[in-house]
Image (cartoon, rainbow, N blue to C red; front, side, top):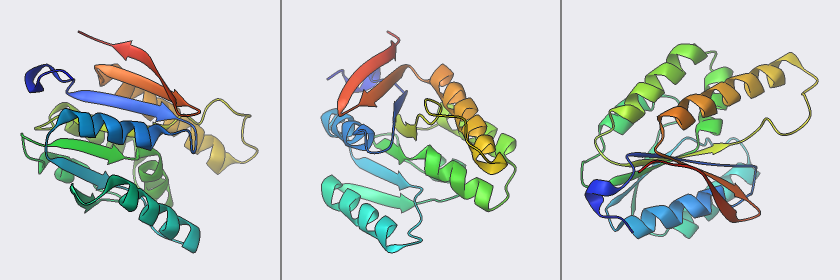
Length: 177
């Protein structure tokens, strides 16, 4: 693994649902040999989601500082310590939360991107690639796909490294020196 001063400041790990993207991001975090901060955006609205959150916690283990931030990410990112590494998992659920709370998507996404650029430590962002399926049949789903695609593009442009995970196999799409 690269030395702390050559580690990418921002990495984006994309993939479909249950593709292995979170697990891959957790492995990158473990390899960094830094204190670990997990920013969780999921909300446990039902038993299935509660079980998924519990499984992710078990998978990570006890060596993480977990911060739950379903809506407001910029302050949580700014509060990270320079010696840490942050896993933001995931911006897809965060976007869903924003839409359900009827927040201003454009300003929230712009603020997130600014927060990622100014984060005091390396950050790995996990996001779903939702644009490879059929066009949804309802306006809200189409708006979600549009917003998610724009957010992924914005973070992808900022990131020094972009990784796509399919069937648990990671492929590097972008890697800047």
